[in-house]
Image (cartoon, rainbow, N blue to C red; front, side, top):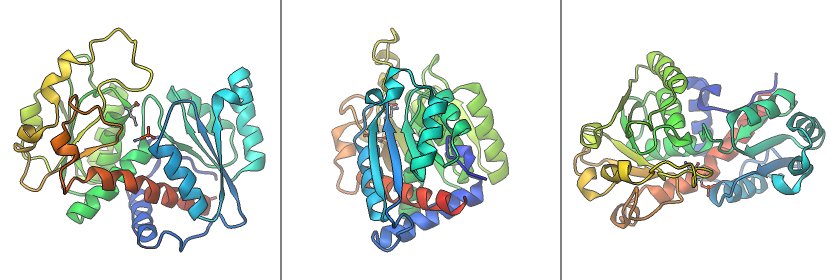
Length: 307
Ligand code: CP
Ligand code: NVA
């Protein structure tokens, strides 16, 4: 049966570990694996802007021996009203897999429901599973493991990164704390899904509003923009309630010695994160960005093997 990765719990803990192992192997020799030789094609569709996701998938598919097709969905017939399901049926006749960055999660679920090829979520309003795989690979590289570590996310707890870190982190045995202002807390369904995963892996999941308590003793401190794509004019104050949540040197000093900071990027320097953290010589954030390439190649290869 065709498998999709639409959200972080579409991979079991064992499967997530397999993908991360494969990503680490692929990172050691980025031209050694050619599962898309032919070349086989992969569609990369974008309804929202992207630098890292677009480039890392495009480069990754080429490194796997395949042919990436980047499609700005607005300029396709979908932009003129062709249904998602009809698009899925047609794509399934041409390409081996489809990667989609879009808005509501229901859209990618609809695509996957009508596709006979694997579908990968390249960011929706609710989830960003590829980013969390990259975060987990970075954590493995820095700490030699994921299980038993504590990760604190500070910022908009209702955004895609918070949800994916909750569920994907718990899948990896990472205890996840989300610190978000009132009114910006994670969706209860996704919190429940994370708790279910945490119960399986021995991790824990907590939500709070106090940044100091949340960071105290953390191994990994993560933040993201306070205004995600599409929220620019939602009428909410996306600065004031978040000010105390900035990831800066003073906040990092409360984490465990040797703790790392992560950010999916793009960063809003001076808002959710400071220059001193981003530009620190041992910053893990640039490895995190590179790791998008390796985990996405591994995910594609893994999904194609499962067909
Ligand atoms: N982190 C991330 O997904 O970056 P892009 O929006 O540039 O793809
Ligand atoms: N939460 C951010 C992530 C960007 C990669 C957004 O959705 O805009």
